[in-house]
Amino acid sequence: MKTKRILALALCLLMCLSLLPGSTLAEEDGLLSGMTDMGYDESGAHVYVSPEGGILRIVGAPAEADAAAWTLGEDGVFVSVPVSAPAAADAASGAKGGGSLAGEGTEEDPYQITDYADLLAFAALVNGGDYFACAVIQAEGGVIDASASDPTNAAYSDALAWTPIGLDSGTCYCSHFDGRGCVITGLTCNNDQNRFAGLFGYVSSGAVVENLGLAGGSISGGERVGGIAGENYGTVTNCYNAGDVSGSTDYCGGIVGANHGTVTNCYNAGDVSGGTDYCGGIVGVNHGTVTNCYNTGSVS
Image (cartoon, rainbow, N blue to C red; front, side):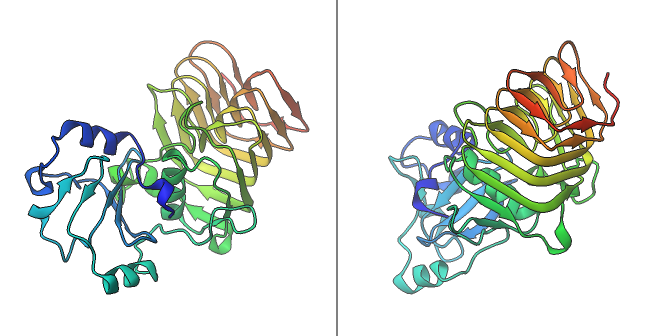
C-alpha cells in the first residue's frame, strides 16, 4: 500500500471529525471493533479497514505502544509513539496481515488478487482514492470464494460485507481490472437503499473490466444495479453473471445497470428483477454500445 492511500474514507473521517484533538484511542471504546486488521504498510504504519471500506492508519506498532499515548493528529490520523527503526524495517519487509496485495497497482505490475480478502483490500484501496489501480485475479483453480459476504453464512461479519469497487461518480474506478478467466462465487452485495451496486459500483470512462464471471450469490441495490457494474462509462468485456440481480427502483441489468460505455461479449444467466422502470437481461438502460451479448435469465 502506498502513502497516497493513507487517509481514506468515510468511517475513518467520521471518527476523526467526532473527536477533539488530543483525545486518546483508549478513551474511544470499540474504535477498532468490526475493523479488519490489514497488517503493516510500506512505511511501517498499522492499517485497519472498516466494514464500509474506510482506512485507519496508525503510526506505531499497536502491540508495542501504550494505547493511552495514541492521539488524534491535525491531519486526522491517529498517531502513537514513533516506531523504532528496526520495527519499521521489519514491517516494511513483509510483516503484513491477510488481504495484503502483491504488485504495485500499475499496468506493468498490477495488484494480484488471490482470494476474497485481497478483493476486499482492493476495493478499499480504490474507494480510498487509488482510482487508477490496476489488478489481475490470480486465484488458485481460477475461483475466488466470496461466500463469506453472505450475511446468512456462519463465517460472515460486518468486515466481510461487500462494498462495490467505485462508489459513485466522485469515487469511481478508472483503470484496468483483468479477471483472467476467473470466477467469483457467492458474492453477496446488499445495497438496497443506495445507487451503484455490483462487483463494481461506478466504472469511469477509459476503464476496462474484463475476463471474469460471477456465479451464485446475489446483487441488490436501489438504483443502477448490475452484476458486474451498477453504472458503466468504460468497457466491460468478456464477462458473465450467473447470480440474481435486483433493484428497488430504476436501471437494473444482469451485467450493467446503466450503460454509457461499451458492453461486449458478455452474457447473463441470473434472474433480474427491477422495482419500477428500465430492467434488462444485459443492461437496464443503454446510452452506449452493447454487442455480441445474450441473456438466458428471467427478467421481471
